[in-house]
Each structure stands twice: as structure tokens, then as C-alpha cells.
Image (cartoon, rainbow, N blue to C red; front, side, top):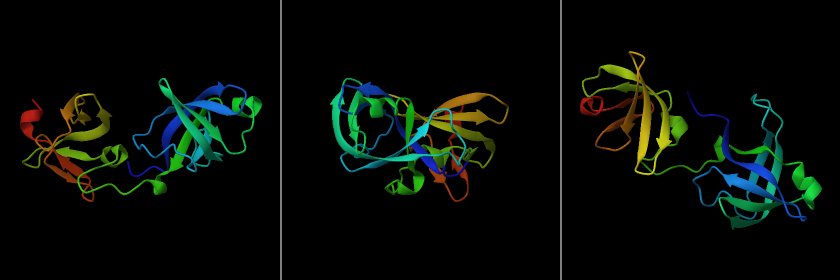
Length: 175
């Protein structure tokens, strides 16, 4: 699938209070994504093309609330301006993502990889990486059209070859 141009990091639910705050659901696992001075880009939910208009938002203040963050953006002084942000998808350019340490991967890097067993036999392809409470799990589309969930662990997936566009899942985890 390749690296997308934009990564969704959250979305604005609604305005909060009278002073320009909005309630934001955080879809990022980066604890430093929503901090004072960070920049995110707002895209309207109904606009999905790569040429979509995005408006730059600079975070002025952040405070946690139950299940979300309350964020003030520079240039959003009151409730009326905050209401205009309702429903915005918050994104960042993928080029601004930090480089991950060896052995860690972004989900979009894994999606679309060919899945082979330890003998080199094609099993299918990676659909997505799911983040479950126990551990990350690969959702695979098998060559026969079936679907399979495999734990994304070194024991089950000993080889990840991004340049080669493939990963290896040990046959015993395929069933």
C-alpha cells in the first residue's frame, strides 16, 4: 500500500465552553502529539481526496477530560470559531512522523505486505495491524479468500522484510 501522505491523529467532536476550546478524540499513540505548540491540520470529514483543503491549527493549550482532550487552538478565540471546527479530522503529514526504533513499524508499513510461511509458500497479504488489549494482531487475507488473525509477535512473525514487501508467519500459527 505504501506510505500515505496524511495520518489521522484525532478528530474534533464539538465546541466546549465559551472560550474557543474543542473536545478532541485522540487517535494517536504518540504522547507528544497534542502538546502546546504542536501543529495539526483540519480536514472536513466529507473531503477525502489527496488534494483536499486542510487548514493548519497550532495548539495553544491542552487539558485532559474523560475520554478526550480539551484543546485551544491559536486563532480560535470563542465558541463560534470553535463550533466551525466541529467534525474536523485532525491529520499530520506522514513526513513528520518520527523514525521508529529498529523492529518497530507503523501499521501502514505492514498493510499490503505479502505473507509467506517459513518455506516461502505464499499465504496471502496483510490487511491491517489491529491494536488489541493483549497484543498487536495482524489481520491477514489468505490466498483462498479467508481471513486470519495472527499475533504480531517475534514468535509468530520472525521475519519482516519491508524492502522486499513481505513478512513470514510460521505455519503453526496459520492453523
